[in-house]
Length: 260
Image 1 (spheres, rainbow, N blue to C red):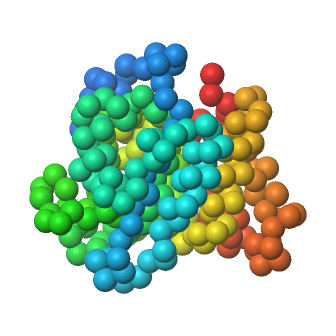
Image 2: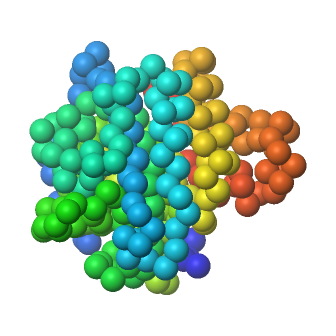
Image 3: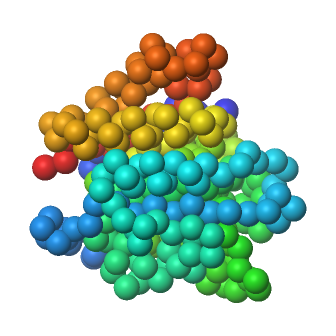
């Protein structure tokens, strides 16, 4: 269990610093906002892996289906959803370098999250994506925290539908110092991250419910939309879903108000 986030981490969440010792100086593109009129609504990435390909002890089936539900709620198209071979580390990096990734207000990654030291190829926390036929330095199927920090984002909200994405960068380190900090450094203004292993079906309901509320009420912020989605699961969900294990793993970090 990681330590509680310190003031320094929380300060970075609310107002990203120009220099972070572990990651270096913030690239200049982080300060250049995309014209709101030219921004796309949503991009979703859902990786698929065969169980024997997973270089980790165990993982649940990736909740790819939620991408379609969320995309439908915000009026996105099939072109905005990357599945299978397109849900690769190489494709994400290509979209970043081309400046395409910066044009999306919501970036939703529905894949497997790995804790620091959980897989053999890297000591860093990261996201497991669709593996290439032959791994390269650019694409080995694992998007590590340092590689995430190098992405070029301008996202109002990054949704990480994966397990333990609020975890620390290393054993014993402070919470939110792993993937969360990397995404803020990359240019996200708010994150949805998890404190423990998530249930696929419950995650679909929570995320879809929150996005649908935001789509139907432009004054509803991310924090309030998630609160209402959690309450709906408690009041209207299956009996077992009233347990906090199912509705409480996710936390919104960063800007929780409605996007301007």
